[in-house]
Amino acid sequence: MSVKVSRRAHFNAAHRLYRKDWSFEKNDAIFGKCNNPNFHGHNYELIVSVTGEIDEETGFVIDVKILKDIIKSEIEEAFDHKNLNLEVAEFKDLNPTAENIAVVIYNKIIPKISPSLQLEITLYETPRNFVTYSG
Ligand SMILES: Nc1nc2c(c(=O)[nH]1)N=C([C@H](O)[C@H](O)COP(=O)(O)OP(=O)(O)OP(=O)(O)O)CN2
Ligand SMILES: [Zn+2]
Image (cartoon, rainbow, N blue to C red):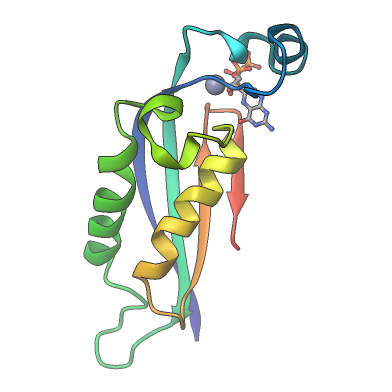
């Protein structure tokens, strides 16, 4: 019996969408107000979902306390109240779009959970814009 277990989390972060190898004009044409050189911020809402078989002894797919601690150490402590472009190594040369942030989050969490479990990341950049990545 396969069940999906989810944990919500959130972090606030600043970012700028642009490419260093493009002119300001080209970045402006592609990324518009998201290319503001002074950055802008979002209240990111994160849903981390883990799917797998229920353990017969515990009744858990994964203990949500373990999931909570992984999200805290791997994501919240690394991203919350940070400038993603300037302060988070993964985005030094990677545009911090919602898509790329979701992939980075997936890659940080996947080594911390059992290989028998499937991981899915849903990231809301705004209440209306969200992405989902599952490897
Ligand atoms: N595919 C993507 N498109 C956009 C991304 C992204 O990460 N992936 N990001 C942005 C901006 O960073 C930002 O999210 C845009 O915000 P905004 O347009 O203000 O979004 P809202 O939902 O608040 O806007 P509405 O006014 O409600 O439409 C842009 N594109
Ligand atoms: Zn933005």
